[in-house]
Length: 240
Image (cartoon, rainbow, N blue to C red; front, side, top):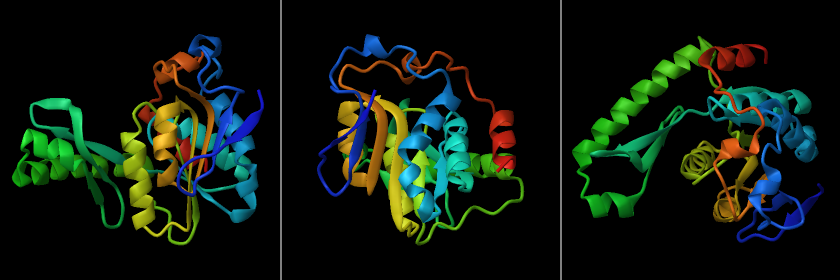
């Protein structure tokens, strides 16, 4: 299937695979053999960035095998971007925002949900502290003693193995902008069409190989969607 350019709001450019974004999702079941296959195919769509000496940031854990293939093809450094959801009180599956790792960790709050649930400032502060502690533990596990990559002024490609609602990705992109990234590129194998269009203005460029209105879970589009382990993440980061 060929890539085609789709107009989007804002200044972002979206690239989609296929002739129609609203075709039956069942036609694409198992479209990607595995995360490595998805990463290699994304790398081809991102080849125009190789001369810009980009940095590739992956959302762990599933985004790391995808990011590894992109980084290898573009001769780019690879790192993880650690984002944690801030849980609503009494509803841990509902996010009231997110906190993103960095020299100055960024919190992105969903004010409408916070207001509707009447979430207190004290609760938010406690939740931020708990999630930052988890981020610190994962930083030690994934990076060891390696410092994070400097992002200021660089072209940064943010990737994952797929997107559903896009909340984590949106938080990550906001944090990259605040970190001074020169250009932000969101690159994912598969996502709902509505989500990708909503995210288009959050990055300078958006690349999605398969975007469908009739969307299933991300794993539906992979023949092999076995869980990525922490050991695999560590091993791929060390190979960079």
